[in-house]
Amino acid sequence: MANNIQAIRGMHDILPEQSPLWQYAEQVFRDVLGAYGYSEIRLPLVEKTELFHRSIGEVTDIVEKEMYSFDDRNGDSLTLRPEGTAGCLRAALEHGLLHNQVHRLWYYGPMFRHERPQKGRYRQFYQLGVEAYGMAGPDIDAELILLSARFWRKLGIFDKVVLELNSLGTIEERTVYRGHLVDYFNGHLDQLDADSLRRLNTNPLRILDSKNPQMQGLIANAPELTEFLGAESKAHFQALTDTLTAVGIRYQLNTRLVRGLDYYSKTVFEWVTDALGAQGTICAGGRYDSLIGQLGGKDNYAIGFAMGMERILALVETVPGIAKTHKIDAYMICVGDEAGQLGMRWAETIRDALPTLKLQVHCGGGSFKNQFKKADKSGADYAIILGEDEVAQGQVSIKALREERAQQTLSLTDAISLLRNGL
Ligand code: ATP
Ligand code: MG
Image 1 (cartoon, helix red, strand yellow):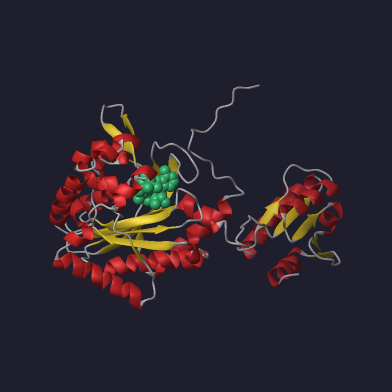
Image 2: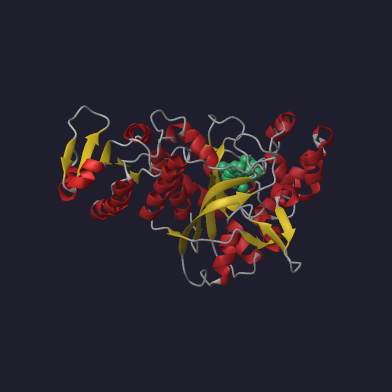
């Protein structure tokens, strides 16, 4: 057995049979984003490691243990992006997009995290991210949630997801809360697991994020951040929930929702499903005004979300009748050397005349029988046939492959008309 090289664990090929569903969902996202006036931004896959240390925060899963970092040949530490928010904001600051402007942006592409691969959790995965700059909210907060809700409706998965919502308040409010939380956990040190003990002094809010089932009782009884919100944070959250109610978006208040990353304030949300097992969050985001200052910008506003394509597609696949296949309309059969050459030429003429027709030309020769088999397997609705007789007469034959109908032999021009109008 040859020692074949395989893909890296947790990094997957998207095979031709899967790509139609990806393309379908990507098109839905593009259409919806366009309808809300969002513009695409394309960002590098690699950034300076420091960018993620400064933005995501040292005491987070991503920076502590998930980043693919390496030294460039000239000794700079670089990292394959684990998420898009940092790079997007880096680009916005670098190109002055935050100077007296508002921006509604989206990006799409692979992210890299060295996690334990399992269903819904990969080392290379695709995210679509949406970021809005320069708007204090809560109107834009609501818009982002509405936009994401429209994604789910268009994909037919709206009834499978729930919106969880929380407010993290301001940094000052969180500092006060943090004190109370540390006191509470200090009173129950014996119940904290190793991760949580470590986080108690560095990032105690993250303890609330723990997935450890044995910690859930302790977490459920912890003080709630909501009690520590000031008037402005409360008003922001109230206005957001009022808008959601007015437009008919249901949500669940989840006071334990703190999000994994350090940079959020005020609004945070997640769209979750119970149809995918443990990895149930398909989309997550929130407001991160303070990150702008953290990366050296002047005070401003920012909010965004990111969604995991693999998890969304896994959910879309549970919708009956959603299967997408790569389908061609016509298959050209050419028997004989002369026919092979003429076929290539005429196929070009047909594609010029009928740009939306999906026409595949048989390559590699073979008998009529063999080529008809391929045509049938291709899923095409009809075969365009060039054999010795057709070449001699300067004509083509057209045969319907999926219904009983007489084969027709006609000039190329007439064949094009026939194809244009449907057989
Ligand atoms: P989780 O709690 O599942 O680890 P997270 O908080 O790390 O998620 P975010 O950084 O908020 O995730 O990323 C946004 C979305 O990207 C997630 O809700 C999820 O849909 C997707 N995602 C994150 N990590 C992965 C991964 N390793 N594989 C596949 N999708 C992922
Ligand atoms: Mg994670």
